[in-house]
Image (cartoon, rainbow, N blue to C red; front, side, top):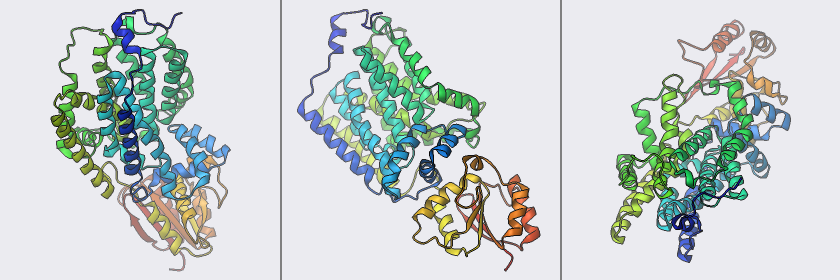
Length: 505
């Protein structure tokens, strides 16, 4: 079956050709990539290394048996990132080093967004969109975290870039690029499945004569290659996301501030105006339109469909969390870039772009000072407190088995951990099987620990309140109260408590 489009009119043929690049474009793009690298590397290690980051590193350090077992049983999301981090981890040990892996795809996203803007519109739009992305605080924020989000954004943008390339010039290479980038995006984060659906949905609005006849193969291949991820989701359901709260109006406004770059209501309004300018004039009377009109359907669907769909599902089962939609950021800057590019007078364009950059830099400087989309836990403080005050022969119990992961990370950074307590749950000392990370301490485990040790450290995480503790905490309180006097307690914000049970008090 032929992979060429059915139409061969001059406009389509001209559209399929690679536009000639002017050297100044490449110079500006290179400068933007350099600026992006600098902004992402500045203060890279300033923010505390929090639970999710430390967990990622420790998971990457597991042997293959435990790594594969835990990924398949519980941590299937972000599996691609864990594999990349597994190859990165042996070459360094500091938080700066581990976070630097995320800087690479963040910087690489800049030229991909430029290419998208260039092929959907023109070089002017591509450079404006790449500039907006470079200075966006949310983009910088996730370039500075040892998690999968910057990789997720890069692969989402690359998937859309290959889709456009395939539509313009269908070939085995562009098809393979779209299928591979889309599939890898799903393994970087499961919410990339919403991007694939958005792409498929957007093609319902494109003139059938401009869609390659074999396009359906792309979707079949993506479904086939992501089948393990879909099996994992079907197996685990939404249980890993049980902690997500039902979103409200305030959550949606916070998301709008986050995705536009932490610049406050003025930057939100500036993006709204620019996006509206990109969409006008637009007529929705025609269902299927040529490519020149389709682009103003494709980008809004990429930007809005994943969010609106998840909000609808969240009425029944809350699944909306702002950072899971960071992959919509390229669509936002492309739309805004298209709106700004419509400003005809150069001085007025410079003024408008300057407003965006000033507000974006304000958001970035604010982010360097403090986070704006989450509250980091203090596992560094928890680990330091235990390691500093422990005695030889002490035992250590983690109320939530996964708490062992960040503790082990910070223990590996400690200069002297010779008196570190012996971990007795989960696992026993240095021995650990991934199944133990999925378990809870049993009453039999706790009774044996209370008998064997004179000093027991207990680290509790998300264990409820003093008035309404969770089941594991109630059992622990009941058993340890029989063998120990009232423990020493130290609280670490948020929702983490360290107790020392000692018979010698």
